[in-house]
Structures are given as structure tokens and as C-alpha cells.
Image (cartoon, rainbow over all chains, first blue to last red; front, top):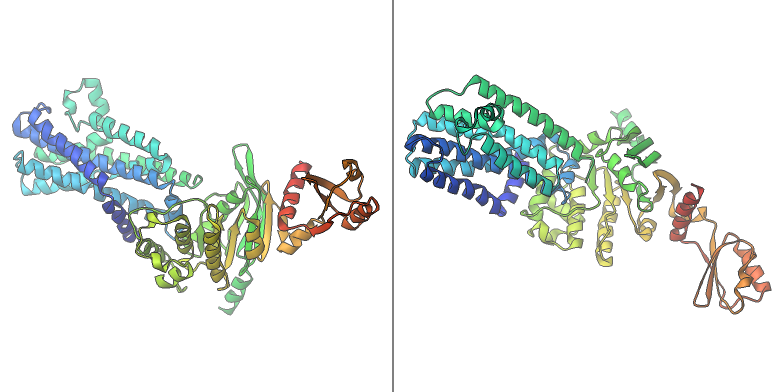
Length: 242
Length: 311
């Protein structure tokens, strides 16, 4: 039943592809501009690789947070309540919506990796490409769950504001645009604790030829747990209001 | 097995016992007690803010009671909904965009079919026929008229052939024609022997389509019975006549509890129409005399007003 629900939501999304295109265009444009400006402070190829991971991650973060906003937008339609009145388990609906969020991250991740390889001549081994791709995709799950929590908790307008704040704020703080090594030291400590930095780090470690760190993965998992509790709370709370 | 069947048949569709729900300092539902038997059509009436929507939200498991219990089909509301035994058409709400009516209903139908456990879930065509939406199957769900959308929402509620169907003000905002079509669909469904609970603002709908009417006010049941029984609860009748004389004759008429004068026509609300008419005749005030029984509307107003007066 989860897959049928995902299918229904994806049909809705694909027939109104406006924001799907948006979630792809802005990080892709930024990637191409950033790499020609050499904003990462790393010379040449290293900069292109860093920015590729950063902007693919940025696109993915935008896509999952947008998915949260679309939940908030479904509330005034009564769709969220209607789903509660169907014989579906709450977990089926929430997991289904998370899978939708994961699906919409594919266009930005794929297109920016392609742009990296084809336009900026990013050269990685086949195993590295595969690992980067999987980590960029799977690693976004905690943020997807956060987006879902915000969508259930907030009104459409509030959710949009919250999503934008998280999107820009956490992406910048997490080092998706500029490596956190260029931050002041006190800010580096804070940045290193954020979920998005640890999300990006998974892939940056791979492109630098290392395995992801245990600390990073554990921290990301901890964030996932926190966001899951938050989303579960928001889901339960949202039943009380139409 | 036979024992279980008998037990299931005896089991009520809905039982509220001392249900209480507060929103902050406002008590929306105040010790509500209510039992709905299977196979009946029940109308839930009440003025705005009477607690109808909260009652329905508790019945559907959307809102837990602060005190008391709510049982639906012998189990908890959440369980009954999750097992696909309840269908609901919530009060407000539009349909989602991007999907056709057939796609939307197909999804709803399969969600019920997945939990059916041996119960029959009717094919899509049958549900669309009951809801009179066969001709809308290929249309985008968000591009329908108000009446059409409401019939699709009704189809969503009945797609799983639920034992209990709950409709929260299903005809609010619809024109007369659309209301009639929706009720035709509800009636077809009731004829299958299902339990239906609906709330409405339109008293004639309660009068026409319910076997039983439950009037709630300030979160409590204040009247409960057939439409006739409720009307009888208000002993009042209306005596109307053309006034040609001073207003003072209206003072001290026996049985009169209220009066209206409009354009020379007087309408007296009386609890003893015989005595009122006799007194009027003695005073020579019987021009165009008319005595009418109280309708459901008068009964409803009297019941809910009296409650307010008591407080």
C-alpha cells in the first residue's frame, strides 16, 4: 500500500512539475557559476569536486524541504485528514511521503553529478561515483524526515518560511557552499555538529579517497533519530486540527 | 462462530459514554452519552459551536476524549478506521490536484481492499454508480463543480463499503439540485442496511433522511428521538390572525409564551392553542385565524434556546 500511495503522490507531482524543475535549476546554475568563480578556495579540479557534492546536496536539501511544504499545502485541502480516515497505518503514510521526498532528490543529484563529470571534468573512479551517488541520496533521509515534521506541524506559509530558513541557513552553515574550513574556528565547531555538514562530509570523504568517518555517520544517525521523534510528534499533533 | 455473529449483530455501531473534550478553557463536549444501533440513519443537529464537529472527530479517532470512552463497532475508533470499517466525509475540504477521479478513487478502493479481510469491497464502477459520478471518471479531481466534488468525496467515503458512514455537514454550500443528488446517493447507501451518521444545518434534511435525530447543545444530548418525537417535545403551536385593534388585547392571553407582529399579522406561540383561540374569539379577534403545529425548526429553536435560558 505504501507504493500505491507513493505512486499517487508522484503522479500528482509529475503533472505539476513546476517546482521539480525549480529544485533542479537553481542548484545546477549555482554549481556552474560557483565552479567558474572558484569560490571554494580549492584550486581547479578539487574545487569542482567539492562544489559538485555541495550543490548536489544543496539541491537535495531543497527538494526534501519542498516536499515538507507540499504536506503543509495539502492540509487546507483536507487531504491529510482524509488520509487519516482511510485504512492506512500512520507509518504507511509517513514512510510513503518520505520515499516521495527521496525520489524528488534524484533530479538535482543526477544532473549535478552529470554536470560535474561532463562539464567540469570531475574524474572519479567508478566505485567513487557509485558511493558518492548512494551517499548523496541515502544521506538526505534525516533532512527528509525533518521536512515532513515541519509540513505536519506548520501552516503552508509558516512551513515555507521554516523550509527556506533551514534550506539556506543549514546549507551555508553546513559548508555546502563554502568549505567550513574557511569559517572562523568557533563557527567550525558549530558547523561540524549540523546534520547537513555531516551529510556532505560522507561524500567529500569519498571524493578525497577516504571512507566516511564513524563519528560523522553516527552524528547523522543521531540527527535522524531526533528528527524522527519530532516528525512523529508533529504527525500526532496535526490530527487535532483540520 | 454463530455466537460471534450474534454478538456482532447485538453490538452497537457507536457508543459514547461520558465523553468529555476541552479546548483550553472551552468545554466542547461535556459528558456526552450516545448509542447508535446498527442499520439506522441518525442525524446530529445542534447550533454552531454545539460540539457536533468535536463529537464526530472523536468518533473518527481524530481527537481522543479527555474523559469517558468512545467505542465504534465494538472497538476503538482508531482501530475501526484502520480496519476499513468506517467511511467518512469530513466537513470542509477540496480534492487534490493532478489526479483524475478514477485514479483517486482507485487508490482509496485499494487501501480498503488491502484491509478487507474477507469483507466485500465493491468494484470501482459500482461505487461510482452509487455516487452518480460515472461520467466524471476521467476528469481532474480539482476541476469539478462544488456538487460534483462533493459527490466524489462521498464516493471516497463509501468506496470500502464501510459498516459505518459518517458525513459531517455533507451538503453545506451546495445548491438545491446538488443537495438532492447527494441525498439520493446517501439514500441508496442506507438501503444496503448500513449505519449512517450525518450532521447538518438543514433541518428538513434531518426530517427527511434520518430515522432518528439527536440534538446536541453545549456538548450534551438535549433531545433524542424520531423527528415526530422531537416535534412533540415542544408542545407549542402557532396561532396567527390579522390584528385590527389595540395591541393591548394581546396581553394576558392564556397559554401565550411569545408573539410576533409583522405587517398587521400577529403570530402567537402558545402552549395551549385551544384556550388561546377561545380567548381571542371572546375578544372578537379571529380575522383570518390560523392554527399551525410546530415544525422541526420551531422545536429545534425552542430546545436550544431553553437550554440557554437555563444557564
